[in-house]
Length: 137
Image (cartoon, rainbow, N blue to C red):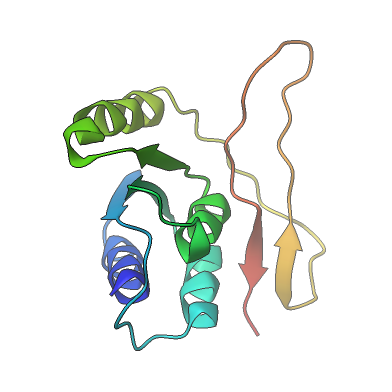
């Protein structure tokens, strides 16, 4: 239940204050979820939870890659279960070294998804950021 489990992590996280991280471990294969992918991606566009994924084995990127990108997280791969520890430590290291930038958009009257881009000026840096925000009707 990859889609259902990812949705539940984001929904539960939205009930808590603070910087929240959800880590989803998967083989990358969707088997029995009842939620459609669109609903999970809509939730990813709205949530304050940062989702990181760890895919074990050779599964394709699928919906988890799109969710992690939408929330400002990242999808990592572990070739086998014994490589989960380094992936988990990598996620914790990245999350501890995050900066939190906020802004309040002005003049946005149109409902729907609005893309944003975050760049660092004057130095080389890797930016992991949300791909945008959603204005509800």
